[in-house]
Image 1: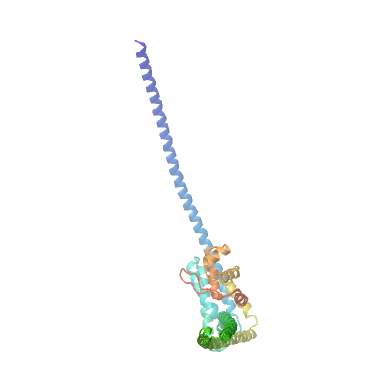
Image 2: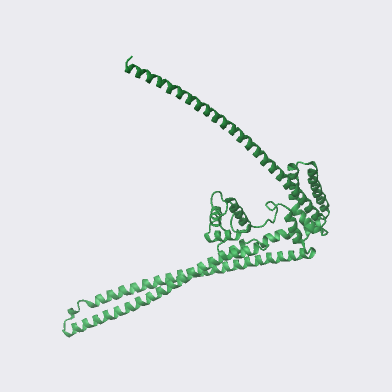
Length: 405
């Protein structure tokens, strides 16, 4: 057997050995991959179970928190109804009833739906029964209450806090200032026109004098040389020029008279408009003063009947959820937002959000509160709200009166 044959046999043997090793390696890798796939499946299953457990725990915590919220709510509702029920002043009792009984009953019914334990539901039902009992007992005092100052408190307060009067006064004052500026401009133009007329008259006089001197000189020259034709028909030219100047002067005089009559008429109309605006301002001020006096009078009457009525009312407000009860507190950034809106004259929620670096939901709540205050108008689709306050001075008056209530 030659060397080449032995070499081929060796090569064949080596290749078969390498192929066997490769097959075993591939089989091991495949088995390892199968294990990895299985481990991934087990991991995914464990994650799904963990997520499900976590979701269940979150739902349970939410359920428990919801239960605690409604239990506390029902307890506060019971305290509120007790405070209303024990009031000795019947008018104040009806006043509180008109404010809080309907919200209390609505909250109690909502609590019955969301509470789980029977005793808690029964406690909420007791609140509803107490509300009905108070409402029934109030019927015998209803006629007296409707005649009292208590029933007029909120209408009087609304009239007193109607700041559109202040806005209207400022707008009318600005209109008066604009009219005065127009009158001043007309007066200035009239003065300039008078100066121009004076200069024009002086110019005409000087021109006429010079021309007359020229004519006299020409006539003297013609007489001196004893030649009448040397004047060149000057008298005719003089008559024509003097006639032309007289016509211009008459036309100018007529134009001046017409302009002065028009200016005088416009000034009279402007003065009448100013007088009307001043009368309107006085009427608004008188109306606001009347509303203020009426509100102060009603407040004095009800304070005389029940000295601590505001304190007791605020105590009941504190027992109810602030986001739904009447009399919730204003956002701390309300004044800053109001100044931004009035300064920019743009009732944009995104503007407030951007300038104050707050969330959109909070900015929207601030805009709703500004609507209640009277700074901006109602929602206008996707457009910014109308700004109802013209300047920062008016805004200061509005906020000082509204935020101190």
